[in-house]
Length: 522
Image (tube, rainbow, N blue to C red; front, side, top):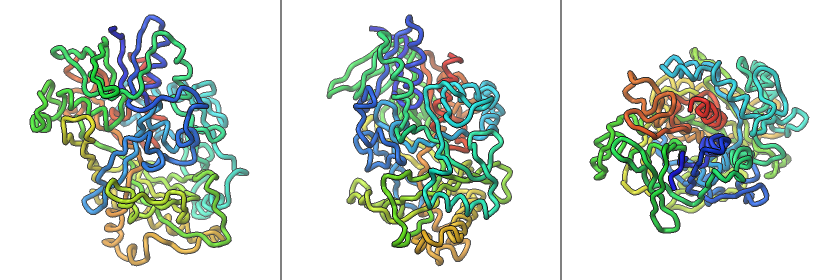
């Protein structure tokens, strides 16, 4: 059978594309996913269904690619969770449903992607959501993804303390963190109504599973794209130990910011030196494939709690966050602080080795205290992804290159000290006991602060940019603004990898928007 579209990856973008494409009954779609499929809410295992926090690599072992990456030359390797399940990372993430700043998308426009200004993407943010708290010009009320916020009367004690400490420190009140003019502290929007992680599997594919023109094949690993000359004609797929070829008029890679560039390179599309070294025939010289790796590096200030403070592992881990602009920065809201009321063992950098493949897993059920996460929301530092094998099962090298510029370090130092200062607020007097990290000695000088940052920064799990979109004048751009891989026919990339830069927000809502926007461009 020859499909009209083959979509590789049933995640935040792929599930949306398959759903929207098959709204036309004359269009046939094959949706391929390497992980398992759970066709309804009742069949979801708890680690996918219940959304307390992000799915760490240990928690979601059966639904996670379990990638590892290098944060900086001074740091231990870190887990890089990516979803391996229908719904992709939207099925294992922290469900933060936050948009970037309007300027993020206007920057994409100014880089030559004229269809991606804030004015042009806003309708697609509205289209994909049902916001239970806000309506009007900036919010949707009948979309497939349900968004809500914890009401102030629902905030647990430590979250309320964080909010009050931020207000005393001069943070403005920001009740709607998805308003284009917002800054300051307020409730985080989440796509987890009643504590259910409302993934693209539940929100989108549930509308399309009955359609005869949609074929969903789970537990199928896509190995490479098949070409006739410069024209994509299908995908080589591995399933249950056998290899098959499937054919389609258009192939769309929606496998995420790790697997999409990996698949391109395994198909002969990428930097020639990497491909030739692995005996991969070069089909198209594309030096930008795997370059421009972006993310939000995160550090955690960690405290133990007093014996009188009760921590409930079933309570929300985070309800409130604060966005602000760093001193000396002209990038609005380039920093974010989030309070976590139930910090577990992997919050301590020395436990990173305990959850590594060669070590022993940290006990994820034992809280070590609470933490404030310091996130750099628009970094200068850029990393890369490098192919290390011609085997799809060997993960690429992920080098994040965190805090490699002085401007990034300057903002990191300020953010760290700001978080420590908030923890010293009187609002935490009955909650916090001892600061566990960083120690006074580790923050005593600028050099010691820099060293601690470079050793402790870890992933915000928002990897993006590795197949960036841009005009022909940008030598590192891989796709044009319609998602078409340059110089080739009938192959697109549509997922977080095409973002030209990371946005000042968690990436899931923007990845969903990209899929909805691309549908109209298609």
